[in-house]
Length: 504
Image (tube, rainbow, N blue to C red; front, side):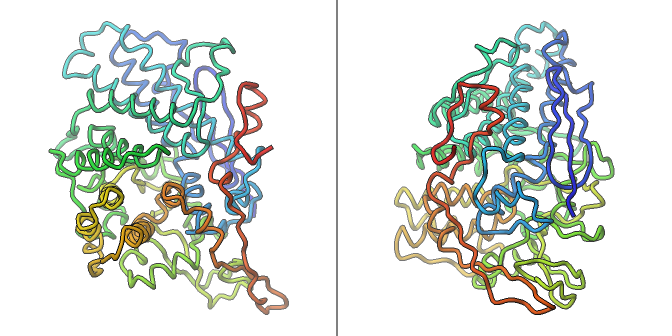
């Protein structure tokens, strides 16, 4: 059954309506946290309100669930599921059109988030309020806005490669807003510049009551993102990756792996020692809830969910003997009667169908489950990758085995750099499934085409209650498909935008 999902956000006096396929709902950004370029910025409170609005960028569709579709469903971890909506099927099939609506929404929402940060950074130095200079508040706001802008640009450059670098959102002049695309390197350099500002201005932590606040950007978050940036960019520097990973691991905050992997995702341990940055969703309040969980799980409302785990992923857990992470990340449910062309084409109630179980409490579109934007497990595995790529195989194995020990797996061994590279990539898959990392990992290591082309996955039809023979799913993932097409609506509005190779 097709459901239309609508989110309305007000930014800079412009009302943007975005449409995604799911269930009807509205996410309003409250006026008190939504200062625009037309508002007066006279006080520290004005800027704090604007910063609150900037953080609300994490409530958009992109961060609620579409990033997981792009990171896991587009890769080999999952299928579309749901009702087979054509725009989402394009993502699943790695055949995204220039008119794809989620693709356009992603571009729009990420630039909206950037625009909010631009306004803060443009206005803050002209506000003369003593409160801004008490307790380093001005520096903290600059650091947080710089980090958030860098985070959004990181999503953009991974999706589309070089994009326009918009640092001034206070102009309606097309000559200033209809910018051409910068190169990938130029975008990454701007991200690094913003993150260096963030590191210089952010504290190691914020304390709320007796607990450390993991919902705001910190020095640790900026260092973690710097590590990911220097790994992901085409001109990667694994020496810098190791440096920034160590800055996180050795932080005075004392980041530590949670002893029990499942506790990371049970809904009772948010703000834990492994969390570097998480989205501050609040359950029971539709305005600030994590409605994305309902699209992955939400079994009580009787319709098939999106991002169905692939047999290849399930087999990867089984072949590794990794029962702990399999149970934490995937749940099998029978008696649904749901028709799934990959697992249960005839809707047999006795056949169990798997679901993305990373967040576990859909609560009828009002979940309080908090996805991690950055967590230590990812950074430790990234350090292992960087150690291996710089020739320290022994050190990489020690680092990798920290992650394996937590889930009761034996120590990994490796015969070569290539062998260990493949084992680290697999470990990242098992550790980070449904956290929107898989596609980026395949691209970063240059194996995306090989993995997707050689994927042995099958679908089935059903005729009079009889399941058909397996039908091979063929993915055509040449190098051009590693990036998404520039949305045609954006090219229509901005003639300066060129298209990515392989797209019309």
